[in-house]
Picture 1: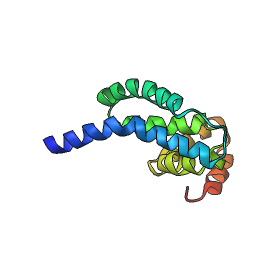
Picture 2: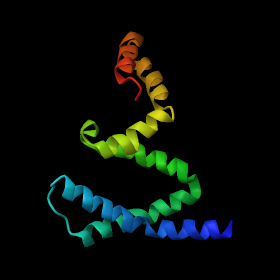
Picture 3: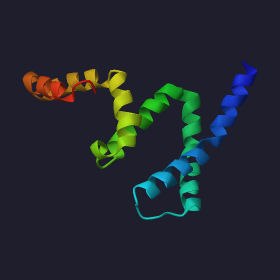
Picture 4: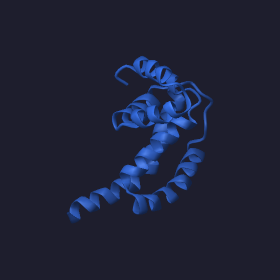
Length: 124
């Protein structure tokens, strides 16, 4: 158990570097305007500090779910971004978020409209 905790702790320390690398690679692949890696790294490290404390209070699964929801909300076009679809939308759908969403939609829209929408999503 102690060795596993040590490995987990080391992995947590590598998260800012990993996220910085992924952001830089994604921007390059999408041919978006370049950002200084040092600036991206600073932003990631700054965001990471409060996130670490959240892990201790809410747990890793809740934090992961929150990050997935934020990714969907922040992305201007999730339908066009495979990383958001694969990393956020599909995992949320698999854990039952679509059922919760369906129930909330039925409170606002007619049930038959929500049913047609759900059919359109297929196996998402």
